[in-house]
Image 1: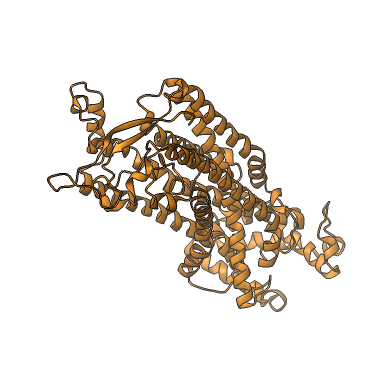
Image 2 (image 1 turned 90 degrees about the vertical axis):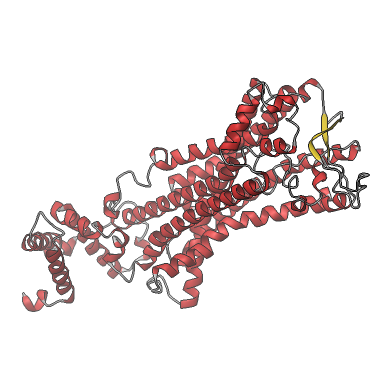
Length: 572
């Protein structure tokens, strides 16, 4: 007994680990002798020689039988019987406690430290990198907002909350200065136009990015767990539950009962009202309730289309780029599917994932949007030419810097130049003039916003299609999965659901939002619905033209951006 069994390396290892756990007392219900007795009894019952001589594990169906030789099939039978030790409640509970209690980071990979480094890389380190990415995104957004608040205080004496509170009081009090002719002052123009800026920036910079990454991580982990359970089921006919991973029963299984659904709904609401406020900053006071409801519904449909488009891209891009990073490491180091990942400090791996996976995932759409913006402005709109000719081009639209063209087109103005002229190049460019070219340029910019928005949706859709069709190749090359096939990732329910939604739902929602927008402008717009189409030209003294005429006193006339003339533009 001692020579044949107790002196074996595996038995010695089991006894050493048992002694360690007995000392730290992870198992309060049993003593070490009781556990060893249960384990010995289980081994004897499971690997009974008389039974194993005739035992042949052959599940129905058996996808691996044709790829294994006789020795490997016999080995699989022994491993299958070894898994049946988990039928013993004492051994099962002790194993779960050992691998999950007080050490969730290493709960799985400690089973075999060498062979599970890829597992740790693809789970723990991806989750930590994502956490740091979300923290930095939030910090960057807050820093940007604080910077904007400080600049507004310094340049225009605009204090957060207090300024908006005073503005709301003055707009609803008949004796306020606004009703005594002060509603056209430069100060009022700045305050009124920027009242919702922080909310819009928070929705477009932090909320949109954070929810996309969170859902991508949730889908990534759900895919990993689904594939792991599938492999165990196909190999050994064993159904694993989430407790074996130290997780709750419903973790990463049902999206519609998870916290991610709540985050998604909150994100859709936030993005809907960001678009609504972007437009209603100008027309909130003159639009009727029917028009507001139609425009709000258009914004809601567009917000759903945005998330439906972007979450699919991020959910498929995260595992693809992660495995692409493993492929690079694999070819640099030269490991195969049986080798461990190169050992390195957790912080270094987390930074590597952050830089090579999450940052490209975030900034590839930014690069595509900038290319589209450059093409439309320089090749179609010829913006630089018109600015050099000192033409006015009508109001601006949300464009590149507001959610990468994803907002519905609406008229906006820039007011940074009012208190500091050097902030904006050709500040009068984004207003109308008597010249019909300003009307034509505004219509063109409005149409280009729709074109760019559709192009970005098409990019996300194309990228998702390419990622789905190439996923099995990158998985095989990374050795994360050695037996995979085309479109296998669609076997994961949540991925299949996302692909179905983006395929069947994106374009109907997009066209519905455009249809509601068209209906709003035709039937509900406070001016266009009555056949009135006008554009505003401020009394800016044309300071954006070089060498402007000075007053008799020698001082430059002070521009008034809230005063001016309205030009009628029929047919806009």
